[in-house]
Length: 174
Image (tube, rainbow, N blue to C red; front, side):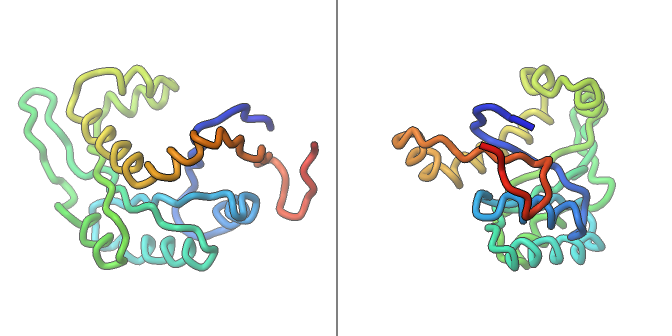
């Protein structure tokens, strides 16, 4: 599959360290700038997150940081945040693992609807609390990779195109 010229490719993988993450990591060997580990605000998720971080490190993929999904519910009527599953677990997990805490994403029915419709761009163009949370994560990633982004832009380097439809060991087409 040809992706065309990309500034960024994000691959959303299922939780854990099974075949899908291993295949992606092996296919993109040396071409990954980092992994973002997503957790939920629960201490029980620590075990899975620690495994994912260990998995990245063993494959020599830098861990960009942790994002806490479903951090809270922001009432659309009052704007008040309700921390239904607890508060601060993502940050504590990141600190314990020695990786950056990138931020949080609240539960938001409008975000879910826009994602289901393939219209995330429309949601992110709105001024709402959830967009602010998401954009703070984007800002943290831009800051983390600012030097690399600048160096790449100055060299006008084109990344090698890789097909994600091939299995590791298969040869790339020209």
